[in-house]
Length: 415
Image 1 (cartoon, rainbow, N blue to C red):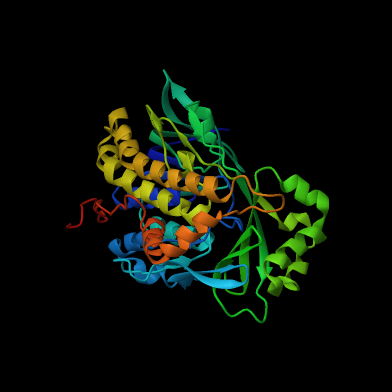
Image 2 (cartoon, rainbow, N blue to C red; image 1 turned 45 degrees about the vertical axis):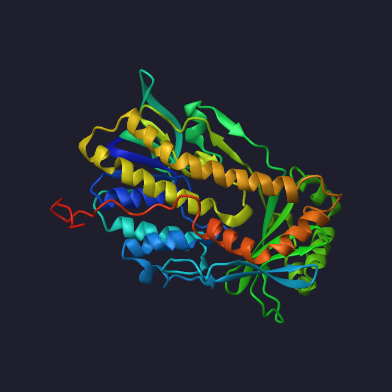
């Protein structure tokens, strides 16, 4: 038996863009269904960086104090170890935001927090373990989605379907809209490392002899990300686990003991890095945002930030349209017009980093920096750190909450 439900907005994907948009719409009285194909939010290979601009949104929503009670590690100044030398990275302490740091928060805690906020509003309807398999279309207009759940098939009809289901978006694929691929030269291997007993510095990035590894602090352990050349994972596995463990130990000798816990390739997850974007993010009845619209490289860890900003802009532009049932293609175009420029600019920065740092390197080396570039980086280091901290922490076009919450009787709060 197929179950059918009707809503004003159906959001496919329970990541940062989808959950944030669902919360904001429901907060303003829009009936919203959020569909997440997994049974929970626990995914070890998701990013953890919550940026100052995202926490500024939490402040605007009156949630920052509660948000910062979630498990997190604040990083005001990013430290890097380059060939054994400790160097300063981005410095967020000078930003004009409430939180002058990046919060390293497991993404499942972030998503659970926002989902709880959404659940406090009657219009928020989150379905876990619900995988979209097809679009419902009528005369080339998207009317809803077909969903497979553990209980059976479900049809969700909506005035608007939002694809927020990430870089492997099924909504994007089903929409058959054009995607521009910029062919990233790297992939990322995710794995867990227990903290060594003698580890004292909070180091975010470790570079040794051209190999680049990020270590995300999760309290008792690191979530590590090793950058590799695109398509090299098969060759790395062919050399064996011990060679992989030796590579990690060479990057950071303090990991020599803890890396032994990686005793199977099942503990190493491959992230296929993409830098791509849709040429057009919408068609009648359908809009894509976040990684579904513009997949980002992990360089700078800005993907979550852009996804959240997309959600805020979408809510700002479409809330009243959805409430009144008059959301047009022209309204959807306004979302892309608002968010395409920051996405393009961020991708250009990432592509430039790929070209100058991660292309044309020697065997077994991911990172390469020419001597002229090293000199320029050294000469302008203080200025570059401030620029980089703003680009990472704030972004090119930060959004602000413009929607208003509704009371239980449906009336709006005072602005």
